[in-house]
Amino acid sequence: MSQENVEIVRRLSESWAREEFPGPAELLDPDIEYVNPHGAIEPGIRRGLPAFRAAIDKLFEGWSTWTMEPEQFRAVGDQVAVVVHYCATARTSGLEVEGRESALLTVRDGMIARYEWFHGPDDALKAGGVEE
Image (cartoon, rainbow, N blue to C red; front, side):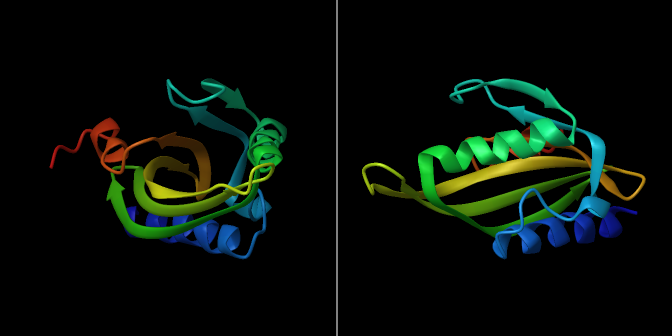
């Protein structure tokens, strides 16, 4: 099951690389939870596909571009930790930023039920209970 979960998350990442947001409907649980970390502009949990879509739309209000290239996918039980390299351009100032962050995605019944992102590249693994 864990490799299947990795493939589901990989398919979501591939759709985002093609700028297909929020992603394929067959991969996203209608009751998906989207979790922003403490320290995010809008921390907390949003529930449901409309809220997930709104969170992504909100991202592009401030950034004209935001790309993520996955560096690592790692199964952690029914979750998948992903480390990404991101590049973004601010919509108003044109400021370009890049860095690394991570996300922990929970897969249930072949669909992504929770997307939780973190500021640091190792944070998703730690949240999943893996200490490296």
